Image (cartoon, rainbow, N blue to C red; front, side, top):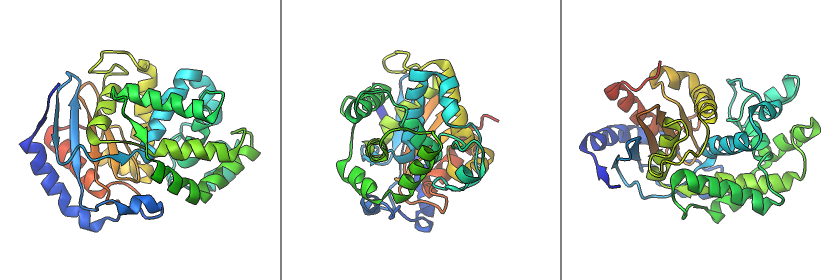
Length: 309
Protein backbone atom coordinates (compact mmCIF):
# COMPACT_ATOMS: atom_id res chain seq x y z
CA UNK A 1 0.00 0.00 0.00
CA UNK A 2 1.58 3.27 -1.12
CA UNK A 3 0.74 6.54 0.59
CA UNK A 4 0.96 9.56 -1.71
CA UNK A 5 1.38 13.26 -1.09
CA UNK A 6 -1.54 15.34 -2.24
CA UNK A 7 -1.34 18.92 -3.54
CA UNK A 8 -4.93 19.74 -2.59
CA UNK A 9 -4.26 18.60 0.99
CA UNK A 10 -0.98 20.53 1.03
CA UNK A 11 -2.79 23.74 0.02
CA UNK A 12 -5.33 23.23 2.83
CA UNK A 13 -2.53 22.58 5.36
CA UNK A 14 -0.77 25.78 4.24
CA UNK A 15 -4.02 27.73 4.73
CA UNK A 16 -4.78 26.14 8.12
CA UNK A 17 -1.25 26.84 9.39
CA UNK A 18 -2.04 30.57 9.37
CA UNK A 19 -3.93 30.23 12.69
CA UNK A 20 -1.13 28.47 14.64
CA UNK A 21 0.12 31.79 16.04
CA UNK A 22 -3.18 32.10 17.97
CA UNK A 23 -2.61 28.79 19.80
CA UNK A 24 -0.29 27.54 22.54
CA UNK A 25 1.30 24.13 23.12
CA UNK A 26 0.21 22.28 26.28
CA UNK A 27 2.68 23.22 29.01
CA UNK A 28 0.89 21.90 32.10
CA UNK A 29 2.42 18.53 31.17
CA UNK A 30 6.11 19.55 31.05
CA UNK A 31 7.13 16.98 28.42
CA UNK A 32 4.51 18.28 25.95
CA UNK A 33 5.80 21.85 26.11
CA UNK A 34 8.72 20.88 23.83
CA UNK A 35 6.48 20.54 20.74
CA UNK A 36 6.89 22.90 17.77
CA UNK A 37 3.83 25.16 17.71
CA UNK A 38 3.93 25.53 13.92
CA UNK A 39 3.80 21.81 13.10
CA UNK A 40 0.79 20.55 11.12
CA UNK A 41 0.38 17.27 9.26
CA UNK A 42 -2.58 15.27 7.98
CA UNK A 43 -3.10 11.76 6.64
CA UNK A 44 -6.31 10.52 5.03
CA UNK A 45 -6.68 6.72 5.01
CA UNK A 46 -9.43 5.52 2.67
CA UNK A 47 -11.48 2.38 3.26
CA UNK A 48 -10.24 0.99 -0.09
CA UNK A 49 -6.76 0.83 1.51
CA UNK A 50 -5.28 3.86 -0.25
CA UNK A 51 -4.03 6.98 1.48
CA UNK A 52 -2.92 10.54 0.89
CA UNK A 53 -1.05 12.93 3.14
CA UNK A 54 0.45 16.39 3.55
CA UNK A 55 3.11 17.58 5.99
CA UNK A 56 5.48 15.48 8.10
CA UNK A 57 3.20 12.50 8.81
CA UNK A 58 6.14 10.50 10.20
CA UNK A 59 6.44 12.75 13.26
CA UNK A 60 5.45 10.87 16.43
CA UNK A 61 3.14 12.32 19.07
CA UNK A 62 1.30 10.91 22.08
CA UNK A 63 -2.40 10.08 21.89
CA UNK A 64 -3.44 11.72 25.18
CA UNK A 65 -7.28 11.88 25.20
CA UNK A 66 -7.62 10.13 21.82
CA UNK A 67 -6.70 6.98 23.76
CA UNK A 68 -10.02 7.28 25.65
CA UNK A 69 -11.92 6.06 22.56
CA UNK A 70 -9.63 3.07 22.16
CA UNK A 71 -9.75 2.03 25.83
CA UNK A 72 -13.56 2.31 25.65
CA UNK A 73 -13.66 0.02 22.60
CA UNK A 74 -11.53 -2.55 24.45
CA UNK A 75 -13.65 -2.63 27.64
CA UNK A 76 -16.84 -2.80 25.56
CA UNK A 77 -15.34 -5.89 23.90
CA UNK A 78 -14.50 -7.35 27.31
CA UNK A 79 -17.71 -6.59 29.22
CA UNK A 80 -20.46 -5.45 26.85
CA UNK A 81 -22.28 -2.14 27.04
CA UNK A 82 -24.74 -3.03 29.82
CA UNK A 83 -22.00 -3.43 32.43
CA UNK A 84 -19.75 -0.60 31.19
CA UNK A 85 -22.54 1.94 31.39
CA UNK A 86 -23.30 1.10 35.02
CA UNK A 87 -19.93 2.76 35.75
CA UNK A 88 -19.97 5.66 33.29
CA UNK A 89 -22.77 7.67 31.68
CA UNK A 90 -23.63 8.59 28.09
CA UNK A 91 -24.36 12.32 28.39
CA UNK A 92 -22.32 15.25 27.03
CA UNK A 93 -21.10 17.88 29.47
CA UNK A 94 -20.55 21.59 28.99
CA UNK A 95 -17.73 21.52 31.55
CA UNK A 96 -13.97 21.28 30.85
CA UNK A 97 -12.52 17.77 30.38
CA UNK A 98 -10.83 17.76 33.81
CA UNK A 99 -13.76 19.12 35.84
CA UNK A 100 -14.92 17.48 39.08
CA UNK A 101 -18.12 19.52 39.42
CA UNK A 102 -20.61 17.06 37.88
CA UNK A 103 -19.31 14.18 40.02
CA UNK A 104 -20.35 16.16 43.07
CA UNK A 105 -23.73 17.38 41.85
CA UNK A 106 -25.17 14.35 40.03
CA UNK A 107 -26.61 11.29 41.74
CA UNK A 108 -25.48 8.53 41.34
CA UNK A 109 -21.94 9.93 41.26
CA UNK A 110 -20.76 8.28 38.07
CA UNK A 111 -18.94 10.30 35.39
CA UNK A 112 -21.18 11.72 32.67
CA UNK A 113 -19.32 10.15 29.72
CA UNK A 114 -16.12 8.25 28.83
CA UNK A 115 -14.50 11.20 27.03
CA UNK A 116 -13.98 13.40 30.10
CA UNK A 117 -11.09 12.51 32.42
CA UNK A 118 -13.26 11.07 35.20
CA UNK A 119 -15.09 8.81 32.75
CA UNK A 120 -11.89 7.76 31.02
CA UNK A 121 -10.30 6.83 34.35
CA UNK A 122 -13.37 4.72 35.19
CA UNK A 123 -13.07 3.00 31.78
CA UNK A 124 -9.33 2.33 32.15
CA UNK A 125 -9.97 0.82 35.59
CA UNK A 126 -12.12 -1.83 33.84
CA UNK A 127 -9.37 -3.13 31.52
CA UNK A 128 -9.03 -6.87 32.17
CA UNK A 129 -5.75 -8.28 33.50
CA UNK A 130 -4.21 -9.92 36.56
CA UNK A 131 -1.58 -7.17 36.92
CA UNK A 132 -1.00 -3.60 35.73
CA UNK A 133 1.56 -4.91 33.25
CA UNK A 134 -0.95 -7.36 31.76
CA UNK A 135 -3.69 -4.71 31.54
CA UNK A 136 -1.44 -2.22 29.75
CA UNK A 137 -0.05 -4.92 27.47
CA UNK A 138 -3.60 -5.88 26.42
CA UNK A 139 -4.41 -2.25 25.57
CA UNK A 140 -1.14 -1.82 23.70
CA UNK A 141 -1.70 -5.00 21.67
CA UNK A 142 -5.23 -3.86 20.83
CA UNK A 143 -3.88 -0.53 19.52
CA UNK A 144 -1.13 -2.33 17.57
CA UNK A 145 -3.90 -4.40 15.99
CA UNK A 146 -5.90 -1.26 15.13
CA UNK A 147 -2.87 0.32 13.43
CA UNK A 148 -1.48 -2.96 12.04
CA UNK A 149 1.83 -1.73 13.46
CA UNK A 150 3.67 -3.82 16.06
CA UNK A 151 6.15 -0.97 16.68
CA UNK A 152 3.55 1.13 18.53
CA UNK A 153 4.70 1.76 22.10
CA UNK A 154 4.48 4.48 24.72
CA UNK A 155 6.76 7.43 25.52
CA UNK A 156 8.32 6.88 28.95
CA UNK A 157 9.27 10.55 29.34
CA UNK A 158 5.71 11.79 28.76
CA UNK A 159 4.21 9.03 30.95
CA UNK A 160 6.56 9.95 33.81
CA UNK A 161 5.88 13.68 33.36
CA UNK A 162 2.12 13.07 33.48
CA UNK A 163 2.33 10.65 36.43
CA UNK A 164 4.27 13.22 38.47
CA UNK A 165 1.81 16.07 37.79
CA UNK A 166 -1.64 14.36 37.67
CA UNK A 167 -2.97 15.64 41.01
CA UNK A 168 -6.41 16.56 39.70
CA UNK A 169 -6.85 13.14 38.08
CA UNK A 170 -5.91 11.52 41.39
CA UNK A 171 -8.59 13.64 43.09
CA UNK A 172 -11.17 12.42 40.54
CA UNK A 173 -10.11 8.81 41.25
CA UNK A 174 -10.44 9.15 45.02
CA UNK A 175 -13.87 10.75 44.64
CA UNK A 176 -15.04 7.87 42.43
CA UNK A 177 -13.47 5.30 44.76
CA UNK A 178 -15.54 6.76 47.60
CA UNK A 179 -18.69 6.18 45.50
CA UNK A 180 -17.77 2.66 44.31
CA UNK A 181 -17.19 3.57 40.66
CA UNK A 182 -13.58 2.38 40.76
CA UNK A 183 -11.86 -0.17 42.97
CA UNK A 184 -8.26 -1.01 43.77
CA UNK A 185 -5.15 1.16 43.98
CA UNK A 186 -5.42 4.73 42.68
CA UNK A 187 -1.64 4.85 42.08
CA UNK A 188 -1.79 1.69 39.96
CA UNK A 189 -4.65 3.17 37.95
CA UNK A 190 -2.69 6.41 37.47
CA UNK A 191 0.30 4.37 36.28
CA UNK A 192 -1.67 2.60 33.54
CA UNK A 193 -3.69 5.72 32.61
CA UNK A 194 -0.61 7.93 32.15
CA UNK A 195 1.02 5.20 30.03
CA UNK A 196 -2.20 4.89 28.02
CA UNK A 197 -2.20 8.64 27.30
CA UNK A 198 1.50 8.43 26.36
CA UNK A 199 1.11 5.81 23.62
CA UNK A 200 2.72 7.40 20.57
CA UNK A 201 2.14 7.14 16.84
CA UNK A 202 2.12 9.34 13.75
CA UNK A 203 -0.71 10.83 11.70
CA UNK A 204 -0.85 7.87 9.29
CA UNK A 205 -1.32 5.35 12.14
CA UNK A 206 -4.05 7.55 13.56
CA UNK A 207 -5.81 7.85 10.19
CA UNK A 208 -5.72 4.06 9.90
CA UNK A 209 -7.52 3.69 13.25
CA UNK A 210 -10.08 6.23 12.02
CA UNK A 211 -10.60 4.07 8.93
CA UNK A 212 -11.35 1.02 11.13
CA UNK A 213 -14.17 3.03 12.76
CA UNK A 214 -15.27 4.29 9.33
CA UNK A 215 -15.63 0.63 8.26
CA UNK A 216 -17.65 -0.34 11.37
CA UNK A 217 -14.74 -2.21 12.95
CA UNK A 218 -13.13 -3.88 9.93
CA UNK A 219 -9.47 -3.09 9.22
CA UNK A 220 -9.06 -1.82 5.62
CA UNK A 221 -5.53 -3.25 5.37
CA UNK A 222 -5.91 -6.68 6.99
CA UNK A 223 -9.71 -7.07 6.45
CA UNK A 224 -9.86 -8.37 10.03
CA UNK A 225 -12.96 -7.57 12.10
CA UNK A 226 -11.38 -6.00 15.17
CA UNK A 227 -14.49 -4.63 16.90
CA UNK A 228 -18.18 -5.20 16.35
CA UNK A 229 -20.33 -2.79 14.37
CA UNK A 230 -22.16 -1.89 17.59
CA UNK A 231 -18.94 -0.98 19.45
CA UNK A 232 -17.83 1.13 16.48
CA UNK A 233 -21.22 2.85 16.49
CA UNK A 234 -21.07 3.61 20.23
CA UNK A 235 -17.53 5.02 19.95
CA UNK A 236 -18.41 7.19 16.94
CA UNK A 237 -21.46 8.52 18.76
CA UNK A 238 -19.36 9.55 21.77
CA UNK A 239 -16.83 11.16 19.41
CA UNK A 240 -19.67 13.18 17.86
CA UNK A 241 -21.29 14.27 21.13
CA UNK A 242 -18.26 14.56 23.44
CA UNK A 243 -15.06 14.05 21.43
CA UNK A 244 -13.90 17.65 21.18
CA UNK A 245 -14.21 18.49 24.87
CA UNK A 246 -16.66 21.31 25.62
CA UNK A 247 -16.43 22.54 22.00
CA UNK A 248 -18.18 19.40 20.68
CA UNK A 249 -21.46 21.14 19.81
CA UNK A 250 -19.77 23.89 17.82
CA UNK A 251 -17.55 21.28 16.12
CA UNK A 252 -20.63 19.23 15.13
CA UNK A 253 -22.23 22.29 13.52
CA UNK A 254 -19.12 23.59 11.74
CA UNK A 255 -17.51 20.27 10.71
CA UNK A 256 -19.99 17.50 11.49
CA UNK A 257 -17.94 14.31 11.68
CA UNK A 258 -17.08 12.02 14.61
CA UNK A 259 -13.69 13.15 15.97
CA UNK A 260 -11.53 12.93 19.07
CA UNK A 261 -8.76 15.30 20.07
CA UNK A 262 -5.87 15.16 22.52
CA UNK A 263 -3.83 17.91 24.19
CA UNK A 264 -0.67 16.83 22.35
CA UNK A 265 -2.38 18.29 19.24
CA UNK A 266 -3.65 15.08 17.68
CA UNK A 267 -7.13 14.71 16.17
CA UNK A 268 -8.65 11.48 14.84
CA UNK A 269 -11.57 12.02 12.48
CA UNK A 270 -13.98 9.56 10.87
CA UNK A 271 -15.87 10.01 7.63
CA UNK A 272 -18.18 6.96 7.76
CA UNK A 273 -17.63 4.42 4.93
CA UNK A 274 -15.12 6.81 3.31
CA UNK A 275 -11.93 7.35 5.31
CA UNK A 276 -10.17 8.03 8.59
CA UNK A 277 -8.26 11.26 9.22
CA UNK A 278 -5.16 11.66 11.38
CA UNK A 279 -3.97 15.17 12.23
CA UNK A 280 -1.10 16.50 14.32
CA UNK A 281 -0.96 20.21 15.13
CA UNK A 282 0.30 20.93 18.68
CA UNK A 283 -0.85 24.57 18.98
CA UNK A 284 -4.06 24.39 21.04
CA UNK A 285 -7.06 26.71 21.41
CA UNK A 286 -8.52 27.65 24.80
CA UNK A 287 -10.60 24.43 24.91
CA UNK A 288 -7.56 22.18 24.45
CA UNK A 289 -8.13 21.31 20.77
CA UNK A 290 -5.57 21.72 17.97
CA UNK A 291 -6.30 25.19 16.58
CA UNK A 292 -4.84 24.51 13.12
CA UNK A 293 -6.25 20.96 13.15
CA UNK A 294 -9.78 22.27 13.63
CA UNK A 295 -9.23 24.91 10.94
CA UNK A 296 -7.99 22.17 8.58
CA UNK A 297 -11.04 20.02 9.29
CA UNK A 298 -13.30 23.02 8.62
CA UNK A 299 -11.65 23.48 5.23
CA UNK A 300 -11.86 19.74 4.45
CA UNK A 301 -15.50 19.51 5.51
CA UNK A 302 -16.42 22.55 3.45
CA UNK A 303 -14.57 21.39 0.34
CA UNK A 304 -15.74 17.76 0.40
CA UNK A 305 -19.10 18.17 2.19
CA UNK A 306 -18.13 15.76 4.96
CA UNK A 307 -20.81 16.61 7.55
CA UNK A 308 -22.92 13.60 8.50
CA UNK A 309 -25.83 15.91 9.39
